[in-house]
Each structure stands twice: as structure tokens, then as C-alpha cells.
Length: 271
Image 1 (tube, rainbow, N blue to C red):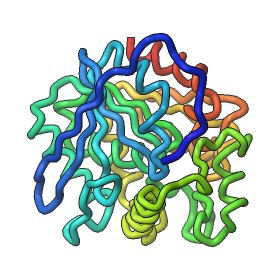
Image 2: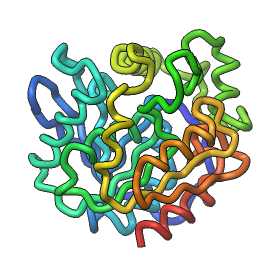
Image 3: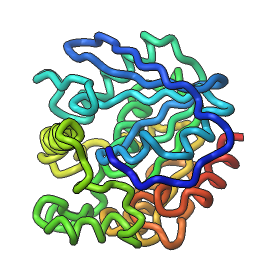
Image 4: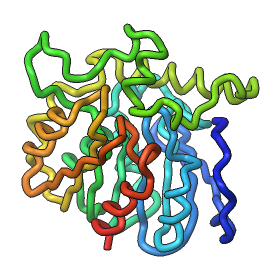
């Protein structure tokens, strides 16, 4: 994914290793960097997290583990995985296969939904949970719009829903190579297959969020046009003891628009 170049940093980047795990009928590519306590990153459908500077910072103190969701960046999407809930069982198998313990999890958007699906089923390998503008539940009635329609609206409109300042979108579509464009097309296809029906939520998940007993932090962009802060407050109410913080001047991806403020909350929570 082409991104705008940032200022060079003095310290070298942590080395990234890639390994493919054969789980169920899927091949799951896992990127790992850094050493220390395990930190599982569940990327968003837009995958801005892969090359983000905050991943480098986290890798200085943690073993950062980022699986590529089935259908994204080399991981396969078999017919047996039709929903995010199906995927959650695959990830539980991955945690077992990697023999991970006391894992803190940060999930972004659809990745936050996936984190909740995992935590409501089996949290024995998990320690803490950070949810960044997650989707995945429906708070209101059948005919009320909880989650903005990214397929009905035009691209420019959706971009404004995602970013308070669209100039901070690091993705430069016009500079993609053919291979990068194909990866982007495959990722969008996977998102549609997994999240279209029901639209970006699991009708049963809201009734299971009470099962999450982990210490949980929700981080929300104050100007999120995909899922508004009222949606976030409804989400937080269903997870006992959870805390929600908002980041001003940020949309659906506060870690992209306001990375330092985002990391202040993450550092404090993980300490």
C-alpha cells in the first residue's frame, strides 16, 4: 500500500519476519517484529496499521504479532470462512498453534469486531483488550443506520466519513503498482464477502459482549463518520468495566490522524 513518506527516524526499524500457518482450510500469513510480551494486532479492513510508525514503537517493548486476515495480503479465504465469527475460531486456533499466553490485543475497526468475537468465546490466552473504533454490533432498530454505508456512497464521501482531514489519508491510489492495486482489490472483495450481509455486524454479538471480562479500553475518533461516538458509548456500556476515550480532530482511524495522542492512551493502558 503506497503511503506518504514521513520524516526519517534515527533508530533502525525492527526486523519483520513472516510465517504462514495452515489452519483449518486456510493459510494465514503472520508478520512478527520485536521482542517482549506478546501484543496481537488485528488490522482494519483498510490495513493502515501494517506500515504505521506506532507499530515500530510498540515493537521496542513487545513482540508485535499481526496476522493477515483471510483474503488479505497473502492469507487465503476458503469457503469455510464466511463471517467474522467464523474467522474468530480460526484465530483461536492460531493462538493455540503459536502457544501464546497473556496476550494483549489491539483491534481496529473490523479487527476490533474480530477481537470481541474471540474474547467472548475464549479469553484464557488473553490479558487486555484495546478496541479502536470497532464495528460489529447493532445498537438501534432494524431500520436505523448504525454504521455508514460505504458501498452506497461515493468514494470521496466515504473518505470524508473515515477522515476528519482527508489529506491525512496515507493511501495514494494513483501511485499503486499493478501488484498493489490487485492486493487492494482482493482486500475489498474479502471485506464485502465477510461483512456485507448482515452489514458490518453480527446480530448476536451485542448479547455476548457481557462475557468479556478483560480490562478493556475503547478509543474513538470524535469525528468518526462511519460509527459515531454515540455508537461507541453503546458499545462500551455492554462491556462491564470498560473505559472509552475520544480523540479530537480524528475520524475512524485516530491512530492515523492523531498518532501521538493515540499512543499516549495505548502506552498508559499497556503499562
